[in-house]
Length: 299
Image (tube, rainbow, N blue to C red):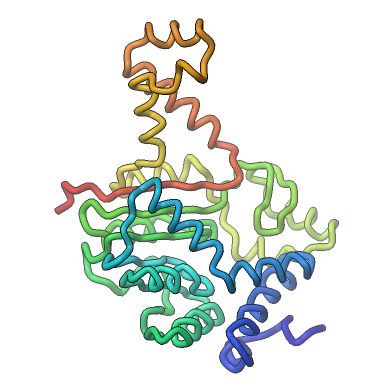
């Protein structure tokens, strides 16, 4: 047993450096709970230290969604170790994070303080009751959170509430219609009953307690439907559907015959066909990634 195996808040706060505090939480979570090899844990530690994941996210939404973080207000619902909040602050956003886990919240606060930002930007609470006013944020993100809440609707409703009309959100979570369990990183059957999943994990030398205590089966159709019911406009596939409407790109990507047949179809039929193909492709994908917008009519 190592000093990392059962580390708590005090260990995170008293660690000799930020890097060591990140390593404590990462090894406890990825190695002790999920059974990742120590080498993979160290690779994840380096990614977290270098902010690789939030940098990639924010560069992506800057290019594809034209997010302008400088001067904007952003909330990270499920801030984890605080990397996304820290990177948003580096980009001159007025960023805040919500994190219910005491160890992750303590680490996120420490990381912000180390860069001379207020630790009060991290709120140790759940996402179903955000401590912010209505219509107060330009952007919201929630990364790998919805599969850890029994009912995702209240969290999505709260994100919708605190966004300004026209504000945008990025939601990413696991899809349990896929043939892969992303936390344990093992092959999986769609919606595999947890008692069977627990036996399977034990058989391959993994501890199923994380599955049983912290995982709720989120699916692509479920999250898509809930986001719509809450009121979000789903802009995830808008560019793709617009290409189907205008036939932009079909000349080069389709055969001559297919192109001619598509041009015979009304635009609304082409869009419906593209939408159907998109949903089929994503129904069994490993992850769910949605770009959402609060209607401007909400003002």
